[in-house]
Image 1 (tube, rainbow, N blue to C red):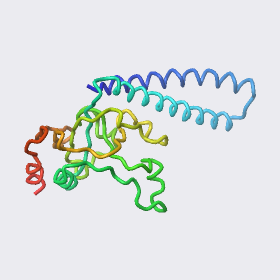
Image 2: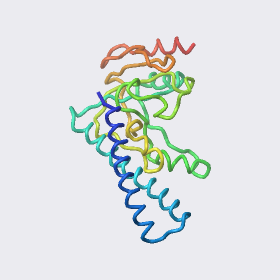
Image 3: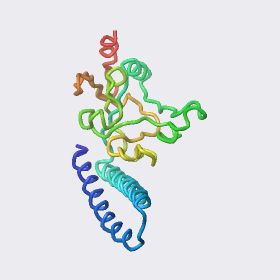
Image 4: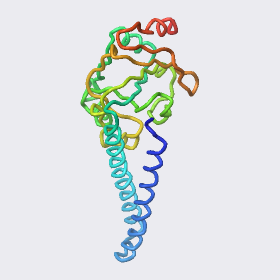
Length: 215
């Protein structure tokens, strides 16, 4: 079990502790330096962003280090549409996405997602992480989830701009995934995911079930 809720609680508590310490020091410093209100607001906002950012990076690092300290492999989930699921299952491999195909028009996406091609996943089964926390609640885009095991060393945290705040729920998986090693397939029903089928190594794939549902 990834114990996402416990890690989320740890992130909140650590952030609160550092923010509380920052506010105490800031009040003392502002009074000593006799700063104007505008300067106080600016420095306070800058301090909050910096502290929460550093805390997120630190907790994300500990989270992945904890995953790597286990049995060596972790369950991860990749969400996708039925159309994409059919294509990937037919190919029998998950290939990394190229982040932005047009650097001039999608430069901001490159900053958010990183330029290194990857597959975005969450640790654990699909019900372990809320769809809100992985950035999409549109059933048309995320109707099927595939869950499989990979070495924890292949996981990376999000780039350090905005998405690192969700590093407990969104990780980058580098390299291809051979689906012949086995996987579980989930169907999205409302807010929950239900097991649609599974494939052991070198056994029959439930791809046909997904294709029939898509029709």
